Image: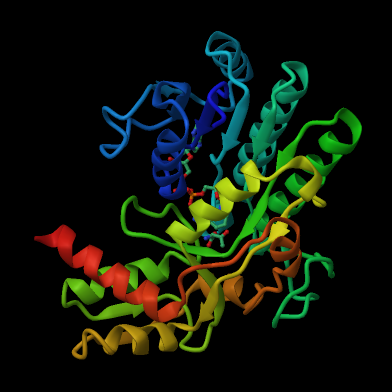
Length: 318
Ligand code: NAD
Ligand code: AKB
């Protein structure tokens, strides 16, 4: 049991941060898992462990926090996601890049044991094969978010090669969850579709009916993150970022999966700028290196995720 680690989760009030912080507080001493975010503490985190307000762009504040709390691992989740990034690309580049450099520099200076930083399927662009996109292929992202994720992967590998920082990363697909709200992603539409279905609303989809994308249910994403971080160092052959996959669907296919349980659900389509983003991303991902290196295997498929999402969203409305 790794009792001596002291963990800082930056971006802890986001879609992933809330669930990851709660999961880490089940494994480690809750007092040793510090949640940090710009926002007010998320209601689900209240009373479960320490919370600090932090702007990760403030390097001094971050450094003091790491020293004061004897931090040994950082999970850096704060970022501007794809759809929001297209509205202000220069700001997204600044925040996504500078925050990562702050974390990597402090990890180097303070000899942190490990750093986790998520990348995304957004690193792939139009040049890459769209089906079973390989780990190593053409990386020519066309979005500001994707450019920042690709550069971030290069920096992670650089800090590992040059300074020995044990930084680990996953290229998450679109993540589906019901506990905390998503923040400005292209794949958020899937969660909105579930919400419309349980509220008996017609859903207006911002992607085209056939815009198929790789997706994953949040419990699998949290488990993958923790399994990667707990894996022995000699099982990790990549310090840029691992491809990760569970299932894939288009809006039409998700609507059909929901209709099996909510037959009256209706959807219409009004594709906007997010459709161009989706068209530049893969439809499915080859994650064989993650499966080989540290034994990755998803538990949820489209049908089991759909059942669980609907049950939990319906429960929350009671
Ligand atoms: P989110 O937008 O839901 O959460 C990000 C959190 O970071 C927010 O709570 C926000 O307040 C916080 N934050 C923003 N700027 C900050 C700052 N300057 N200082 C401190 N906190 C700040 O995002 P998410 O979906 O939880 O994503 C987390 C990470 O995972 C991001 O790097 C994202 O690119 C990556 N990712 C997410 C998905 C997904 O589907 N959710 C897929 C691929 C990759
Ligand atoms: C987004 O849509 O921006 C994210 C991602 C796939 O990185 N969900």
